[in-house]
Amino acid sequence: MKNLYIKKIDWYIFWKFMVWFFLSLLLIIGIVIIFDISEKIDKFVSNEAPLYDIIFYYYLNFIPYFVNMFSPLFVFITVIIFTSRMAANSEIIAILSCGVSYHRMMVPYIAGAIVIGLLSLGLNLYVIPNANRTRLGFEDKYIKSRTNFKRRDIHYQIAPGQFVYVDSYSSWNNTAYKLTLEDIRDGKLVSKLSAETAMWDSTFDGWRMRKVFIRDYRAGLGDEVRTYSQLDTVLALTVKDFYQNDKTVMTLDIHQLNDLIDTQNMRGDANVMYAEIEKHTRYALPFSAIILTLMGVALSSRKKRGGLGWNLAMGIALAFSYILFLRFSQMFVYTGTLPPVVALWLPNVLYAGIAAVLYRIAPK
Image (cartoon, rainbow, N blue to C red; front, side):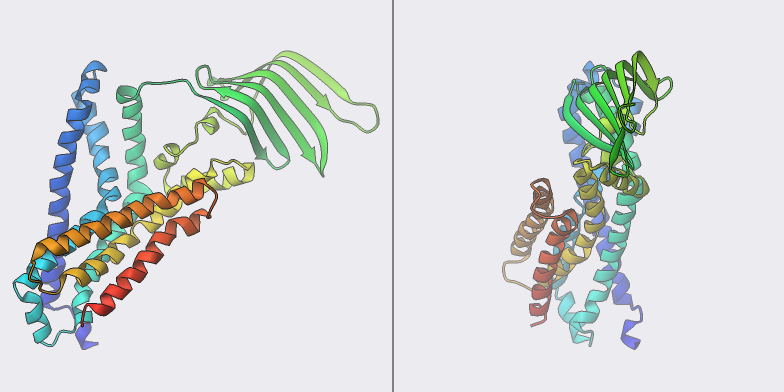
């Protein structure tokens, strides 16, 4: 237990880790913003985007998203650089010669990785969704051109026993074509509504249907049939349900995301994969800080004749392969090869094994 007490060397390594990490973030963020401005300056000018909105609505909300996306790479490069410098200056040899074991030396590294991981988790769950909502709203208004899209053959269960089918939906006029609503109880069809068109009306948050045909099924031959040239109604289906995609889920905090997953699972909505990918990515990504820290120390803690260059090259290669695998693993979900929880955690499991092997070899 005595070895677990915080020592000066722990604070030295911990603060080195934090300072190098945040300095590298500030440097790369500045470079990325400069390149992003040069790329989008024409659209800012042509769309007359106010300077205040560019700074506070776009770039201020762009920074958390970018920082979190590339934090695994920053962590790895930070550990590689300052640990290699410590090794080159014989600081690690001095630490180990003073009776501090290699495992004990790892304590401030792991503490720093946990702090960064918790910061990333908090950003993922609560801060970045709000920032994305503002950032994507700015992009839709000043950067991206609005285009009409159509969705076809939409099937939803909007409530227990209530099923909606829409032949096609157009974003140009927020209209669903050939909408059918079926009410099923105890395995029997009791009511069916068919509408030629259903246009969303934001004044009462409902649908304005035209050429409506309603049939209530009764026992025997006593079915009741009603027709309406126009019918306004409210359903457990809104215009937002037709816009759910991979960008939408980026704007939801974790509670909203869980509610969306429950709703889409109940409806049998295939777009639930976007929400599930987003959820598991938010939880899986912070663990990369610990995994890549272990790998970085194991690769750079030994003094090498080649100096920093070899450690940095190998480190960047491993970090990029890890980040690439994190992104590529989403394809397993899109193709239906693996469930989201397996696909999104697979890179962590695989690279945790690599980190364990490297860490086992490092003290030797």
